Length: 86
Image 1 (spheres, rainbow, N blue to C red):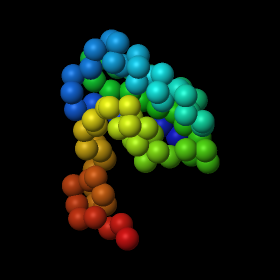
Image 2 (cartoon, one colour):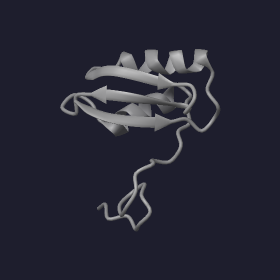
Image 3 (tube, rainbow, N blue to C red):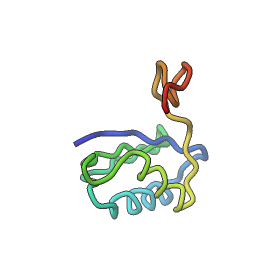
Image 4 (cartoon, rainbow, N blue to C red):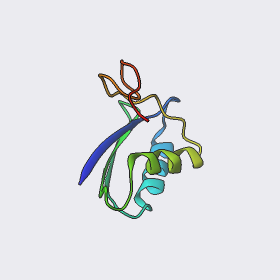
């Protein structure tokens, strides 16, 4: 299982986090979704053979959730350095 954390741009309510958990839990390959109202985020454990971080992001966006930019550090997309993707 792989684990990824998604932080929401807008402040979450208990109801909106519960809805995000429902959206993510319905995706094939998702094993667990742990919401944090205090940190305004959800952590998702998933099988990378069945789904991906990008797919989870798309499903959240389609459900109306805007996400903060990835919190990853270092080079590459979403980090502090130049993008090395091609």
